[in-house]
Image 1 (cartoon, rainbow, N blue to C red):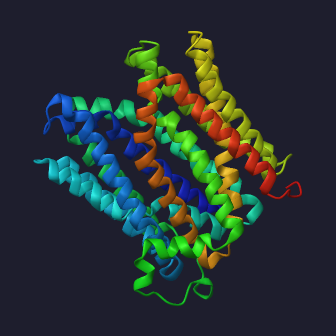
Image 2 (tube, rainbow, N blue to C red; image 1 turned 90 degrees about the horizontal axis):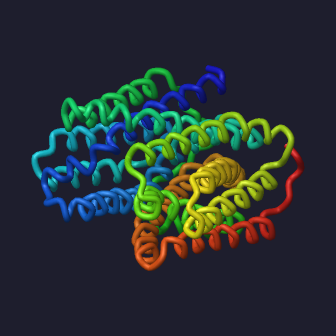
Length: 397
């Protein structure tokens, strides 16, 4: 099979998974509300998110390292089946501990993103990777665009139905991987040994962070995802509290986010990569991203739909330019035999952000929403400076 054909299969798998995961988002408060009183629902949802992120933090590096030994395809199938079991348990429900069991199983097998990125790295030339990482992000955006509306429609029929639909879509993804997707990592490029150390999360961190260039990129990634996480975890609440918007207006803004994400990653980024190098695109993306966060700060002083809309366009466009080029740089920093471990550590760091950022952001938000987004803009500004100073210049692609 030609490399590009198998990469388009990967894109299809990402779309199916993204649609499935987005379908269930509107239903989470209602299904958790079946087992907790109204005032505790937000605590229950936060706990479910934290448990999933903590399990991913532990498991992702090990799954990545195992994919370096046994191949991407096998680990990807295991990861997808874990998600199927997790969503089926959500649909069955019956008790709060079953929901937590579903999140734990899904989290401990959550190697699909890191394995997909390793698969793309195996199957592309270094100069092509940023473009394909952008396509993966765009595929996620396509799923997020229509999934919530479909979830709301299905949930009106049965609260459990969207979870079974999601499990079915992910199972179809698994079948597509099994029957249509060839293995990307040749036997001669695989790691030779697996030991108990392979299941030690922190040993993988030690191995990856011992490489100076990789360590610096990962630390820059932590800063970027901290800024992005502040925006993602609090923006809907910000619109509700500061602008007093209801579901219709907020839904419109979420649609704008999806459209900007798809256009930036699928159309704008490939065009820019033909004319500029990844480093410069990444720096420009960070500057645009930080400017968008600054516009949100301004919107706390001047109430304006235009300012908020521009802020969203800047934030989504900027992050859509930086993230794929960052992942491209990261994948080029290490050889094929350690791509899985590297991507696993990267996913694990993002999971740690997902545990810590909401807590810290909530504390600052209670004091001042404007200060929270000013903090995010400051973090991104630091990232721009470090990225410009320490990431070496490259020749134009």
